[in-house]
Every structure is written in structure tokens, then in C-alpha cells.
Length: 371
Ligand code: PMP
Image (cartoon, rainbow, N blue to C red; front, side):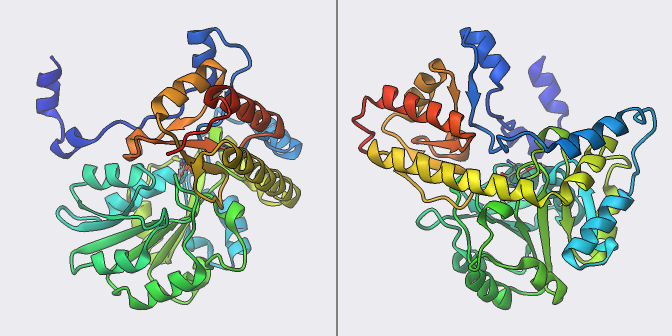
């Protein structure tokens, strides 16, 4: 039966592995009977959305008998103002994930090349494969995206270059200076997509202002999301900022009501909440310091992170993952990213971080991983 169905499939998708999400807390509790498990596996914001956002969502609930505003008018207006661009420079997505997919489907012709960093967000190679594009994979250097090498990988057939900044799963950034040089040298026919899902955690003087490059006419697309900083991962909403010509093309294939009413309302309310951003950034940076210091003490090698997660290497990552699970702590194995020895740990609340560190101590027996 399965062969028969596979024979019917659009061929390129047969080589794609389904996305493996972090294990849900409920599943762990059900499987192992462990109450109060903590999930540090999907780079979410550990804090709930602010009360004002929840109130706005509650108020909007009674209206969900109607379809959402298909153009996301109010949110796009607000985002346009925030980023000093026109509203027709913005397109909303069902998470920024959907925009990655829409960009690939809009622009990548069969046989054209897409330059991808590796290891990086696993959705890029899957979608390139699905649309019949060719993946040109450029490995990281010292856990960082190597823009010089990405530039050298560009050919006349290259359509898109994806740059996750900060990069998932390493948490490293490419700097303003590196991006300047890259954009100066990259040929005009190439669309450079900066995926800035973790932007707010990394922002600082060395972080590139990619929107300024866009305003100056460079062929760049900037992706942002409300999933991380805004604590709205469960509602699914993100956006792209791009030239209106690009947005108009993406809109031709965007599903009519791809972003639901509650997500739009929540995102609009979240936009003004600078206090939530400040609190989250402070807590996450403190969490990264605390967890990194604990990993150092345990002798676990890890990559210095500018995001809300840390990639660490273990002698036996699958075993460490299982042992942490038994202690009710869910982290993310990275075998699907091609990293057999690594785990990605999302920084949580102070209590969750303390629970993680206690579990790591118990599992590693204070002797560390000595990789
Ligand atoms: N880009 C990167 C680099 C990510 O890590 C993620 C989420 N894990 C996304 C995009 C997609 O986020 P969302 O669809 O929730 O906006």
C-alpha cells in the first residue's frame, strides 16, 4: 500500500524527512508518567503573552465566525510604521515558516540553485527539495555561517541565499560588517533572505540592520516572527519585509486567509509591548549565562549563543537526551540537523533552567562529557 501511494507522490518530496518537532510536554507525561515536565526543546518564549495581548485575543474570540482579514490590513500598517517601509512591503505568514515556503514556491524554478548554510534551520532544504530546486549546502565555519564561502557558492543559477541570523541550532550571528561585504559582492539576480526569527535576542551594535539594506534597494527579504519574543508560537504568525514587487508576487500564491484573526489581533497588541521585550531579553540573557556557566562547570562543550538556546556536545547525546527525559526535561536532539553528538537546549524560566541544570548534574555525574 505504501509503495502504491509513493508511486503517486510528487517525486522530489520522497527524499524529504518529515520535520521532527520537540516532544510535547503532555506526551512525555503520558508516556513516562512524569508530572511537571519542562520543555526546553523548541526555542519558544518561556513566558506567556502579556495580559493586554490575552485580553485583546479574548475580545476577538466572539468574532471567529467570520473569516480573518485576508490582507492583515491593521497589522501591516503598524509594521510598516515600525520599520519605516510602505505597507505593501509587508506580507504576513502562518509563522515565518510559511513565508520561507512561499518565497521558495514563488521564485525557485526547477533546477535553480538555493544556497543554504549547514547546519541550519531544517525547513530550508526540505522546501527547496519540494519545489524541485537544487540545494547548494555551505557548511558553517567554527559554528558560524561563513558568508564569504556562501558568496563563492553563488552561480548564475542561484535564485535564493538563506541566512538564518542568529542561526538555529548554533545560536551564532553574522555581523553587520560581514553582511555589508556580502551584499556588496553578491550578484543582483540573487535574493538574499535574512531569517531573523531570533532578532530581538541578538540585537546590538554588531548586529546587521538588514532593513536598512532593503530600504537602500538591495535585493533582500527580511523574515521576522511573533513566535519567539512575542510569546505567540501557538498562534502562528510571522512576516516578511521586502520590495513591493516581491510581495505582490508572493501574494499571488499566498492562501487567502493564511493568518487567523486571533493571531492578527494578538500580534497587533504585542507590537506595542516594549516591557515584555525588555523583561524577556533580560531573563533570557541571564538564563544563557547561567546555563552556559553550568555547562562549563560540567565540562560540556557548547557554542556561545546570541539567541535563546544553546547547542552543546555530549559523548553520547542520544543517551543524555533519554536520561534527561526520564528526569522530566525535554531538550532537542540534533540528529535531524546532521549533528549526532549535539543537543540544543532552549533557555527557559529561572525555575526551568535550575531544573535543567540539576538534571544535567544528575545525568553527567559531575564528570562532564569530555568530548
Ligand atoms: N526560522 C528559524 C531560524 C527558526 O528557528 C524558526 C522556528 N523554529 C522559524 C524560522 C519558524 O518560526 P515560525 O514559523 O514559528 O515563525
